[in-house]
Length: 423
Image 1: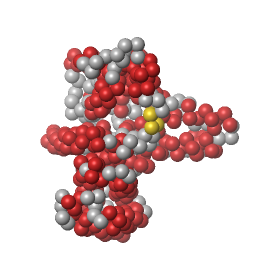
Image 2: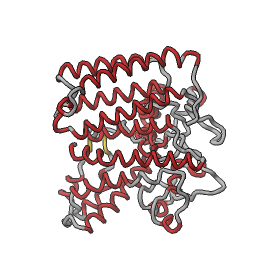
Image 3: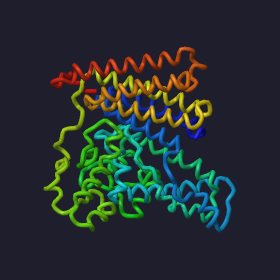
Image 4: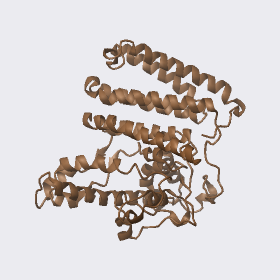
């Protein structure tokens, strides 16, 4: 918990800096691929996912360490070869867990968030799941366990492998010559995120592209077919929690409505998007049929709301940074209270981004929760030792947030009185 939090404190500013550089470069080139509202949603998704991971809010049914202890036919030292073997096996594991997430109905729910952005930029790489609480694919690491790759080597490689998938989420890097035959490049991954029929469910590899070529899922990016991004059942929200559970809710309601018991039981394991017979007519859902003729979500919003959303994301990021730096000071179980407050914060301000008036209720709840935390602990989780007036700053921020939300709900939203903002 503490170690991973420290890693994220180091990595988060790097990711944020690269996102800003991509934004500036895009504006300079006249091709801004980083709309602010979309990026706030993506960064917010990354924040809640990282909090979930730091708090360990997921279960591995069978651990790698158990596999390695029971089945290793040899035992490697933590040397260069162990890291190379571990990295290749983790990439194999990543390919198949990724591919299955695209192909099986109930697994798509945890991955849909990553594809939900209708843009393609570095920020969308941060759209990671908060709805996955059980790790089902540890068995794919058995090859490394058989060779006796030490568990601590796997533990080191896993976050590195994840972070290395950040850079190729961009439209600004075109094809990269001979590297296209070895690594997953931005061109390969643009294909993966596209909803054009020819590109769907292709290029599942995460670092080495040869897995797709080996298993028949490779597709080159074609100059004649510009990629269009998103998901075919568009999310229509900036709220990462709503996006994370939309597909699951559809599966639950379809299973409940299904007349045949066979459909109720098998819908979870059918190919992604499968619904019982005639359900598209009886219970239609919004679906993109022409990828070149649909309106992206949230392209019209007020500049005021956009800037306020940016402020909310940045302030929440500061709160998270303090949490990761101070896990030992905060201690257990208080760190889970802190995490719950972060979840509430992100849910509240992204509801406001969606111009939902219920955001006023969520902000009111957040204010009272914040006051209750400070009253109970005496300050904001020990922050007063670093900043003498930290508790007053937190309460002031929460009061301001409630007042601004009240302003938006009672002025900007009525009659859609919003100024069109293009960035």
